[in-house]
Length: 53
Image 1 (cartoon, rainbow, N blue to C red):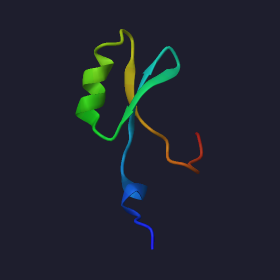
Image 2: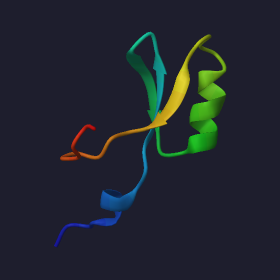
Image 3: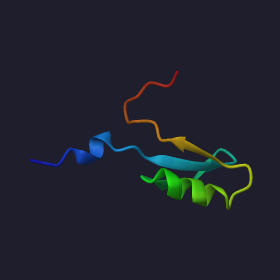
Image 4: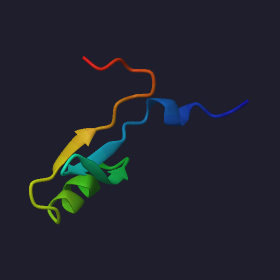
């Protein structure tokens, strides 16, 4: 039986110029990487199957 632990894990993305430049499960790491990209933002990755609103 496969593990379902990754199903509920949050993933954070660093987005610069409408392009994902880094992805991590650690928010502090994502924020540290975002400091290297001027104008970038850290956002939580949308879940697969989630509807955009």
